[in-house]
Amino acid sequence: MKAACVLLLLMGSAVALAGNAVDVHGQLEDPALQSRFERIAKELRCLVCQNESIADSNADLAVDLRRQVREMLQAGKTDDDIFNYMTDRYGDFVRFAPPWGPKTYLIWGAPFIALLIGVIIVFRVVRQRSLMPLDE
Amino acid sequence: MWKFLLPAAAFVALAVLFAFGLNPKRDIHALPSPLIGKPAPEFTLTDVLDASRMVSNSTMKGQVYVLNVWATWCVPCREEHESLVAISQTHLVPIIGLDWKDNRERSQLWLQQLGNPYQAVAFDGDGRAAIDWGVYGAPETYLVGKDGKVLYKFISPMTQQIWDQEFVPRITAAQRGGA
Image (tube, rainbow over all chains, first blue to last red; front, side):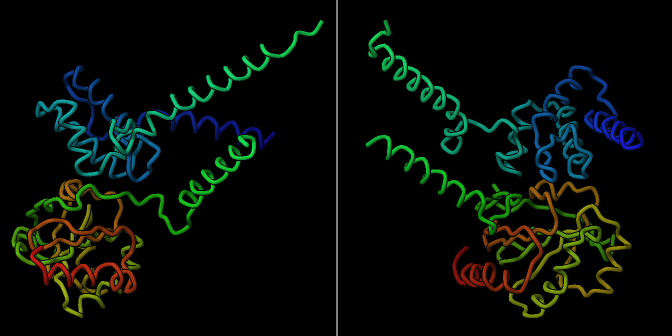
């Protein structure tokens, strides 16, 4: 019983932690800017925690990077300006969606290669079966 | 023929993948710096030891220098400090410190008690200079050439061995050559 209670408590806190990180700097006044901010922050990796976005992390660096994004939005920068600013400093890894380029052809191409292999296998199996004599 | 070759090829492919991916010497958290070969970002910040004085890396143009990012809250920085002090005593190259998101009094105490290997330490209280350098985890150590371009970045505590293997050859080459 006690163990179950502890488990429930832990599960509850995990749900609570899954929300966005609390922001000390508050919301942007313009709701359009705020929604752009939230989208960009979700697209940028927190480099300390690596598998969280800077929107989800409370690491010091994530707080600083959120401040940077917010200031750049207020200064009228475009989304591309902000992403370029981040990749210039931290490399492509800072983005969850890596850009299309020679280094990432394999990442983006892998699903299609897998699909192609699957199609070839299905094709061969079907052809083999169609060549087999029908059971009477 | 295919029945034998295909599994063999798959095995070789996986072996290569795992040899690279599971190599214990590879630090999966170390990221290549996009800054290598690019001009070092400039900063002008107050001196940790004296808030009325400014420290800027723009005064270092024309000489090879090392930038070490550290903080008193950073445990591995404490670990590498002794090596840095020893390295600084060889006077091979000036070491500039960047004190990242720190407390000034605590930093001063740290330098007093543990020794000061730095020619100067810039106080980056709000972490903006660190963002420009793409810093994500202290300690980080950068090597900058005469032309002001970043030559090398090392993430992790500095040791005498790393210094001798990775830094000294690059420094002597950079000091001798144009870059």
